Image 1 (cartoon, rainbow, N blue to C red):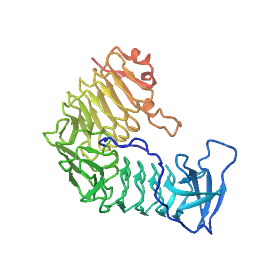
Image 2: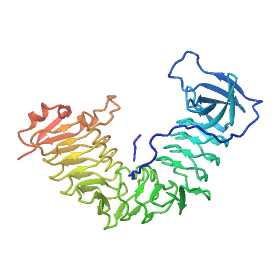
Image 3: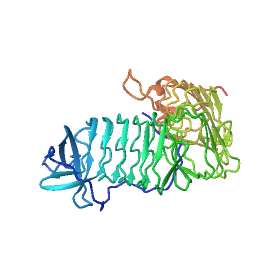
Length: 431
């Protein structure tokens, strides 16, 4: 429904791809294996090259054209896997035996899969491979080297062990794993380590994953950490207070997506790039408001006069907020800045504002008063005040229900300007 995402960005391997594997794959008994090709109409939209019935479960495969006689598990016409599944290490199709070397992108996405046995022939787990599946148990074989981005996003895993062979873990791999309490890394892994159930790179400079089921209310980043992987904290509902040390030099405004109880961020005063005031995160100069904690209990907030930009998702899911006042100096309200602030009732937007980007006030269902002090209508996107109206089956709820208050003598200007004129109720304020 909503994304996203406060995350710290790191330079990782770009797009996940299956690569040739030269190690020997485990052999299995194919006696009970049958294969069927998919459509022979050369339709590029087909998601698989052939299917296999193995131990009562139909499995789908794509041939890896970058390798010799290798294939990877994919999905059929629909994401229809369910229950407990075992993957063979080899399959035969059209007289050729293929080694199963990978789990493909979205292979088990949004399925009723609960557990899976992966053979030691598999070297790669693709992006979103198990995302939103009902997966509760998995053993990753010691052959796996790459785990793609968002691979286990929104699964029901309670614990997971990273084999010593793993060299790469993509962004958001354990995002929104609400039940995940324990991450273990096997001895001998040269790339990753776990300290107090938190996953880091081996050199302790990057925080990779903070388990969604970790119940601590306070967390202080280790001083050596300078970056956090996107999605590392996503969905943790226990964390309330975070302390960012001076070495953390790159933050992203969606770092705590779904962390509804975060009430305060504290940044070490020696941090060169960031600062906090009353638990709210800003850049060092306080010209950009990056993150307003969703767990703050105040119903009103005044944006400091130093702020020129309210960044993407800065106020997302802030259900306690009823009023927000922005002061002269503010210039831009970026995309999804007030995304799903469903109880927000009134906002004051100053005369210096020059742009409200797409979904700036997305799904602010109770917004009733918008005061604009700009004497000349500035740029807004058509979906700046986007909200679904079930009765009319469209997204113009705010344009019909909210009153737009504008400076005296400017009503006709707003009525003649694209997208501002979508508001049904435009009222001039008294001078």
